[in-house]
Image 1 (cartoon, rainbow, N blue to C red):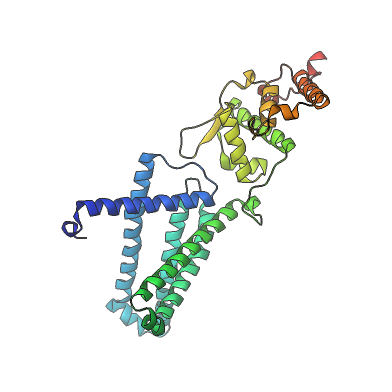
Image 2: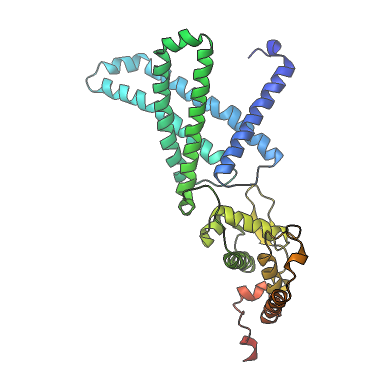
Amino acid sequence: MKVGVLGSVGVGLLLYTVISLTQKVESAFNYVWRVRHTRNLARRFSDYMSVIMVGPVLVFSAIGLTASLLDSRLVHALRAVPGVGMLIIVIGKIIPFLLIIGAFTFIYMFVPNTRVRFRSALLGASVSGILWQTSGLLFASFVATSNRYTAIYSGFAILIFFMIWLYLSWFILLFGAELSYFHQHPHQIRPQRDRYRLSNRIKERAGLTVLYLVADAFYHSHPPLTLDILIRRLGLPGDNVTELLQQLVQHGFLVETGEDLPAYLPAHDPGQLPLSEVLAVLRSVEESAQLVPAALLEVAPVTHVAQRLEQAVERTFSGMTVKDLVDNRTDPGAGEN
């Protein structure tokens, strides 16, 4: 690159464009992996520069080394040996696929802001890498033999072909990311991307279970639980678990660690957190006071039943805290015997 011709402003705009594109790629991968947390600024800059500079250098160096090796005198001499020549040709055709699979594996493990298992990343990279390399060969053959389109569209044919190839490339790359995600989280496989609607009963039980697991890990000095661990323990879709955790954090029951892959800790002493307060919050999730005027719901018999229900919850769990869940002391009559 001739910086003098491009100019300092052009170099700055080029760097901004590349970093912005990488950020969009990370956002797309985070969406696939149901991750709502992005890297902090320092981590983002260092990781992006590694992807931008180290990754392409390694890939193109490997491709160049492969091309030089296949063009060497030793390889030409070995090609004349019966059986060895065919093996070298096969290896020469397989190496590009392996390089692409390796590059995609690196992307699937490194770009999403979550921990991706190597086996899951390799599975998605193997499928997408084979599709990408095969479609590239087919597309190159199609472009080379499409003189009719060049005659019709003139110079615009190159741009049209490039846009089609760009769409296919990103489709294959994201398809491989989806495969990696579902291999690591098979319980997330469902016909639609829409999140499941949990009933209030399930929300209450799931919320109490999350608080129990986090508090239990805290009291027994176990490592803090992350989103992936909670998803596996609860067996619920990741979207619902993420939303539930956000509600618990917003209401001050849990706090997130300051890591790029946050874990969850009790925000306060679980022994000072009443169960009745937790249940009241879980039952009012997504409730909006402005949605329906309160006067419309003021029907005397219904109001009386609602008040008795709240009073029954208060009496039943009076004096009980989240720590009682961990200590398995949730029987109201346990202390009377």
